Structures are given as C-alpha cells and as structure tokens.
Length: 153
Image 1: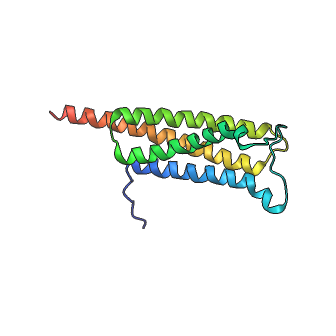
Image 2: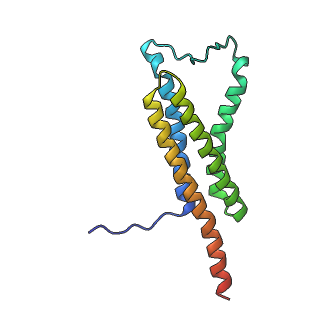
C-alpha cells in the first residue's frame, strides 16, 4: 500500500513551478534555435532583419526582464512570507499567464505554425495556471491561518 506523503509548503510548490516555467522558457528558445544546427535559417518571418545589435537591444532587455522576474520571485519566495508579498506575487503570476496566452496565440498565427512550439507554449500556459492557483491558495492560507489564530483567543 502506498503511504501518503506530506504535502510540501506552498512556497516550495511555487518555487518548483517557477523553476519548471523557467526551464520551459529556456527550452522554448532552444527549440527556436535548433534549425541552426541543421543549416536552416531562424530569421523571423516578419521581414525586418537587424543589421546591428543595437536594433534589437529593447527586445533583449525585455527578454532579460521576462526571465529575471521569475528569478526574483523564486528568491523572494524563499525569503519573504508577508501577506502583501503573497498578494503581489499572485498578480505577477496572473500577468505572466496573460503574457503566455498572448504568446501562444501569436505562435498560432505565424506561418508556418511550429506545432512543437505551440505544444510547449500550451504546456507552459498550463503551468502558469497551476502557478496562479497555488499562489492564490498561498494567499488564502495566510488569511485562514490569521483567522484561526484570532479565533483561538
């Protein structure tokens, strides 16, 4: 018979989900670059070809920010346990879910559709929804725990 394992804390679940999300994000980029290893172009089909790195510096900074926010969230979740942090963190996860959904929709509109990328983005979107749920439960735990402490007096 299988023994039930003690559930990890919400913070541990959140850190694990952010880590899965970041690994998926890295692999999303890796998949986009794989054609290079087979002599194929990876130029975006939107028609603009940059001739200098400065032309894409804004995109690079936005990509850095998109990757850095989860790193900050992981670190902060390890160190901060305030109700305000939990609420702010929840809204960050919601923003990321909206951005992932938008990215998924865009991936569906760029011909030819790279279905392997769509599958990965759909998976990352589901991970994001799970992250939303766990972050919301973390807020509720804080609220419920506070009520239990107050009612004990």
